[in-house]
Length: 355
Image (cartoon, rainbow, N blue to C red; front, top):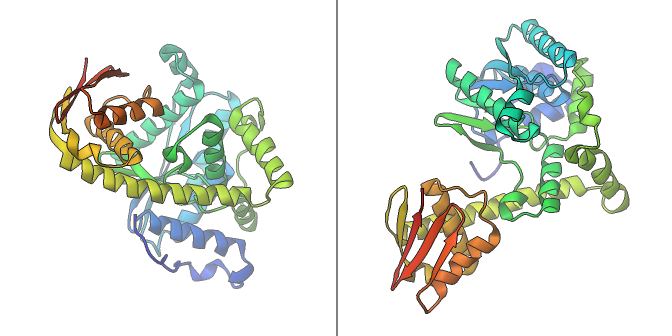
């Protein structure tokens, strides 16, 4: 990710004559900055559009910025078949919107509820995975190297707060990343992470652009909706009216800190590594024993990522136990989820995953 001064936005001259008060200019300038932050200039972009306000604003904004940012656009919509006739109507509406702007659009259907039952996984988790699989496959089919989704600053604040409530570390505090890999040659970007939902609605109202309403977004039996409609408004009213802004700032600070720790941990891991395979890793124990506990824990997290060992069952206590192994003066052996066995032999640490 590029650092330093943010580039000045390139906004179509026709967008407004009163830029200081114009909702269109406000959103387009932030979207422009977000796209540049994600290095999307000149990209072939697949735009994920559900029909809701956020994704419609993303699509309309990208259409306005298409020429100055030299973007090639196409859209994609997945019908999860979770809301019956409403879901079918959403798909038809999205298709019509894209036809209006002569924009190619891929619309597909996925039986998410049936897939969740077959795999015995949660409905929300299954829908998310199916959606990203669809976007990845569609991007590959059409040669799009960038997939744009419409998460906003409000989504980011909700995500960070949700992670805090459930219990999280530094990774959870960073919330959603501005960009991440979706495949070997595909980048998923979130260029609207600095844009508030109120700014989205003002922009669409200025355009006279309608959008689809998902009734399930009002269902407060769902945790995410309770955060959005009950907890965050209560925090704003009773404690701090800028709580969403501060949660987003926390995410930025956590991302910067984690990135610095990641670079340091990768460097240390390269120094300590003797050899590795899919099942066995050998490390120089004396290299790791000299560093702080937080950095040593991050080294092991990076190691698990590097060799693609499962991390779902690895809790903070497990990573911390690994530090006990490398810092002890005595021979040490522990077993971890995976399963992974850890043995210290003199100045060598041997980690072996049992298949």
